[in-house]
Image (cartoon, rainbow, N blue to C red; front, side, top):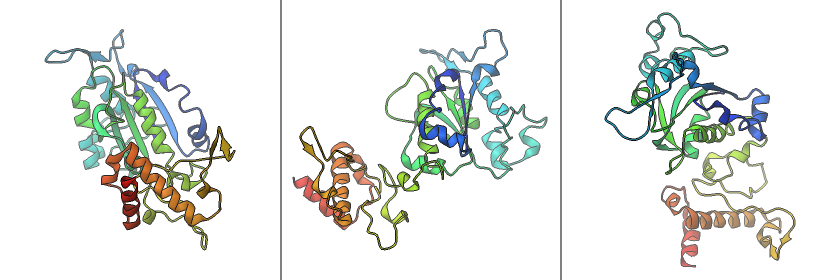
Length: 293
């Protein structure tokens, strides 16, 4: 899987993709990350990437020309051209492709999405991360200042994403969040594939097929809930003991305790998730007990 990131501050990504799972995934050839400086696609001596907004107002807006040229250099055709998948109309004289980058005019069969990081976008979720992990390539455009000229969004962007109801100084941190969340779900990136299933916002039990024959599973699929609390050695720390349910080796009891804790955590911290969580009759009974106290 390939990630292409377009930004006016490429140095912000130095180090982010050089540690942990992300670094190992790149070393193994499972993912590729490339960062491009938007100023490299300007042609004036000041390398201008922004201008004042029409209609007045505070701040500056990223200009459409450098962004369009950057996307063309990455081999990205417009949404209309990708939809029609017509090589004849995509780039009559051929795109100014960058080294190692293939043209994407929609005709190759590869799946690519152009994503604009913006406070105006849809809220990024784990469900979206799972969908994006099935793609071949994601191009991330990092907004700055007051935003990006809307014509770039209209012409090129397949998705406009926000990572939360707050405003950052730019889309770089959001791009790093999206890239990390997606690439850890690419097959082979995590050492244990089940790690991406048994976690907050994970899949429901019915979608998980990692059981060992004859061995009761000690975990529930989250089914849209938050994860349960985790403990490790020592069994007692600062006067607090690990819950007895986790120490007796009874997988069914552990499983029930963990599900109850998932419900407790979600009710306390994210009650909004319960509305769409996949709950069975036992879950609803436990939830009612928790609410009654």
